[in-house]
Amino acid sequence: MAALMLLVFSSFPFLAEMMGQQRHKVARIALVQPNIPQGEKWDPARARDVLRTIEKVTFDANEAGVPDAIFWPEAVVPWPVHRDPAVQQWIESVARRTGKPIVLGSVFTRGSGPTEEWFNGAFVADPVTGLQEPGYAKRKLVPFGEYIPFRPALGWLTKFVPLGDGDFSRGDDARPLTLTAGRNVTALGLLICYEDIFPGLARQSVRDGAEVLTVVTNNGWFGTGGAAYQHATHSVLRAVENRRPLVRVGNAGWSGWIDEFGNIRANLRDEDGSVYFRGYESVNVTRDLRWLNRQSFYTEHGDWFLVVAAVLATVAYYLLLTLRPPTPKLGETVF
Image (cartoon, rainbow, N blue to C red; front, side):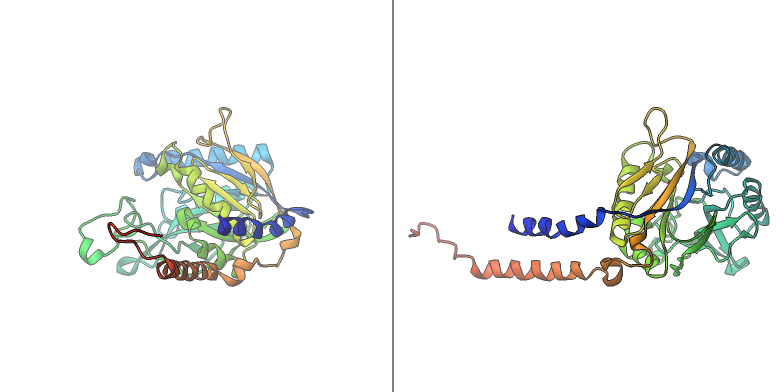
């Protein structure tokens, strides 16, 4: 109890930071949830229907919300960028027709033939200059979804994501993507799907210059239970740890944005209050100017606290073993 009270009281000084905030608009962003069922997403026979659905929801969002930028979820297009030039042309066409930059998640390839590599990534498509290169490549891959671990022993298994002939390749660059939305130029630190459960990934993105964290995900795998909510709670921690606003967009939900102090400022819901639906919403994303070009203690110093806590817990355990009174023997009287 003493340790818990110490932990609680030591957090009180940080509450003062929530007072006197100087909110400044970053951009008005349209979050688009196309809600493509998993059974249709990678079906070649349904690919053109998928594109038409994305277009319709995107154009509706652009007309209704007058956003500065449009955000799509993870792996939104049914074909990889670069492998088929028509994919990039379609993405750039949508950006040009809306007149707004689009932040999107998409599978993409590098190379060709035996040296071809597949990545799960993200890009910014500008309405004037087109698809910005390089994009972002996912740094933490999903076991059995994007690669098979211990492939020499488990090579007979296949990924449950029916893309690519083999394993996806891992990205190693945390540099942010540049978003020009209205008059503001913002550095976006990208996280794809469950990358937001790894504190070190978000920290590295911020250390490399990200001013707004962005999570694109496809939570259609989870159905309509509580898993999408559980996944989204990790985004709250990433925003607080690094004192950066975080924008999140999912295929069917959870979508919204979270400020630097963990407050959920917007969360997309339908008329029944569900986060699982096909639709859109435009939200005004702001940030506290006091944290502009400034890094949090965690961003600067990392996870040393965990190491210290582990050492203290180990020391306390052995102290208890040393100081514990001897166990009385059976029948022995203890005074």
